[in-house]
Image (cartoon, rainbow, N blue to C red; front, side, top):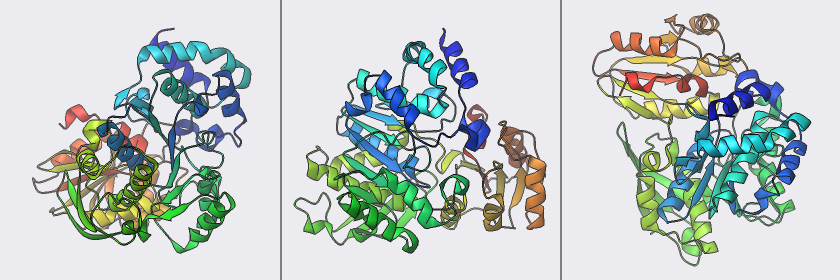
Length: 441
């Protein structure tokens, strides 16, 4: 098969969450374990870091990958979903896996696909493990899909686990309380493996403490170590100043008591992800990984360039500013609105489209009435029709028109904007994925 034929086969043959939602999710790890057995257990042949959480796990994974790359390690990175190219899911040192590898892997795994009928995600997890072993990675950063306990990635035994935060998302799959959602995410905690939690909240602290204790896993809440004391940003970078309370108790703290990180992910919400990453890196340095403050500070200034991360407060152009952000749930939208408070602009234009199985009303309730709205939709079966979204928005005082395509909506917003306005594109990863960047650079 050609590369395109291989991709077409995977998309057509395997249930895909981005298209059909919960029906694509398998409720156990049986298929993933069978795939790994077929591939000669690649998940046990690489060192890994496992990252879960409601929001921020993609940013966290890319931050870690950037640091390991800067330190000279051959670094694998598995994330999902992709925006433009399937191969964005599987990278080494910022480079997507080759088309030839995808073809060879698909041909190899095809008999097993026909036998066990796995999901798209289960196959891509196996593909990533196989690639990282084949290419002899020193370390691989593995992001969960959703949840943790039953996520296909949860067949690894990492050297460190990170849980970014817990918020309201995928309640139909993970539970309808924060404690239940946290219990699913805590499923990535392994016997004796240190775990860092990036954000502490009252409803979930005991869940993590009990799971970590049951697994004899050292547990670190990053907020116990670091406090954000100053934040300054522009459209493309931000500086985060932290003071540390407990690192001096460790053998060799990487940073002085007060230090500043310059980061090319300028969202204020990134401060929480940074706390988790910095605590994790301190623990990894203590384990013997050759990481120091200079490597970290250099790496975090060029995460996008190093890893290819897109869609996190990503400013496509100025005059007017066009910003893409994959915020799509209540927790993520609250963080994004905090970021908006730090920016200076005249009129706000919001281009938005969402999927049906999110808590759309909860997100819309958070959005400002004073903005101009452009309601649209992505072209997947899960997408909420633009007219339905507009009606929900209108009932909450969010006024705007409907557009069949996100690019049409953005271009109309540009026509309606002045040079000091802000056009914000939000609501769905899949909506951001349909933005034609060539129109705006």
